[in-house]
Image (tube, rainbow, N blue to C red; front, side, top):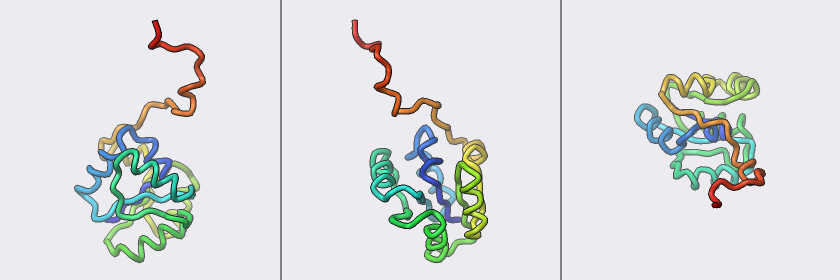
Length: 130
C-alpha cells in the first residue's frame, strides 16, 4: 500500500513522527501532499522528524497523487485528508479516500488537542511568572 497524508491531516495529529513510524509497519510507502509551498511541508516534517518517501513538491495535491501512483506501483493507494475537497481529489485521481478521524481511530493515532500555536502569544497573562 502507498499512503499519502494531506499536510492539514498530518498537522492535526498529536505525534506525526509516531504516525509515520506506525504506518511504515503496514505500508510500503508513506508521504505528505499539500497545496502549500514545498518549504512549508519540509519545515513541518523536519521539525517533527518525519521521514517521508515522497512529498508534493511544487505540484498541487491532484498532480502529486497522480505522479506518486505512477512511481509507486502498489496494490492500493490511500489518501488521508480532512475535507470534501480532499475526498473529491482522491476520487478524481483514483485513490481511496479515508477521512482523518476514521484513519486515526482504526490505527489508534491520537488527534492533537484543538489548541493552535497561532494563539500562543495572544494571551496577555503569563502563568510562569510569580
